Length: 322
Figure: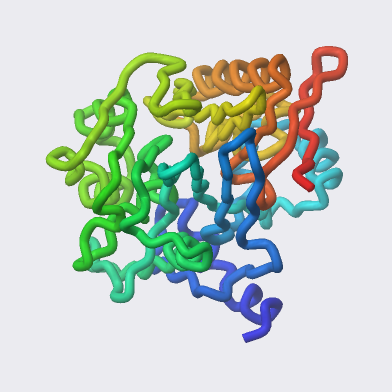
């Protein structure tokens, strides 16, 4: 099927997931494919491979809910995007350090058969597993899995339906604040499908090789540090990869679009607490700028690599990975 024809016939399907009220979620393996699905860089002696799980599109009314209309139109024109079509990548990152193979986030997951939830069928066809195999990485090779927060596009690849746990030999690193929130009544207002993802992908880890850590700037593994960035969710983290005086800062969903760097007060429908999210944005921007870190953003244009610039107290995104 030609890409243009597929997009025209699938608008409702692709936009449904972010709005939480879809009836079926079906992502085909050839959706939005480009030449770049895998990008590998070096951070000191650490090999970092970024996998493009799939692509979605979001709406400006959900990404920038309180933006001044005139400012918004000017801004989205600069980025050559449309209010009803803001492309967004879903990714996962593999770190290789000696005999360690560490996966940060796991994508939406892949199911051969539809998942039936409350009478509706959902088909998830993420690509992380396939892309790992293209790099000759088997599921059993993964030694550690770091989950930044418990939204479906980050945790869906932990389990594979009846086939069970995708990474049977891994240690799972989760922040206790995120775990506590989703396993308490505080999360009762979250979408039912999100809660289901947590139950089937996260809760089941409690009897496995689970590392529930606490605090801020916590070293999970040598050269890998978790930084608390609550706001998008209660216990979201960013991850610093550090080797031989080189840094990569994986910000997950703390910043969803480059415009949220330029406009810190612009809110999204996807943040649990905007004020906390804003403080986390500033925290990460200052950290990345001060230490001249390369940044990897989950939802930016693939592979989401760039630097943070600052001019007259205004932040901006410098897209650069070549």
